[in-house]
Length: 122
View (cartoon, rainbow, N blue to C red):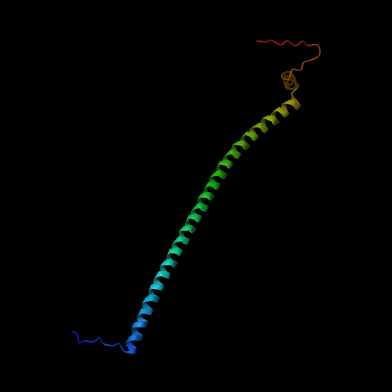
């Protein structure tokens, strides 16, 4: 055992060992770079999905607000149409019926000449 010497590596074996070390380091570098790229890709995809979902949710919120606004406008339109019909009927009455004119004038506190108006307090 004492007399045994280590075998000396030949030049070809030394070059093979060196290239194996370089290849191993290169593979480690590729693997770490691949991990970084995959992680970055996952982060980018997650952010884009979140942003897309936020945009979708805000659009849905806008749509529901607009639908509620449309309903309000429809009820307001129906009220205005009924008021318009009432005003048209009143206009027709006032242009054709003298008693309707007199009733409207009396509702505003007007009277004929010589009439006395009495106001009663409760």
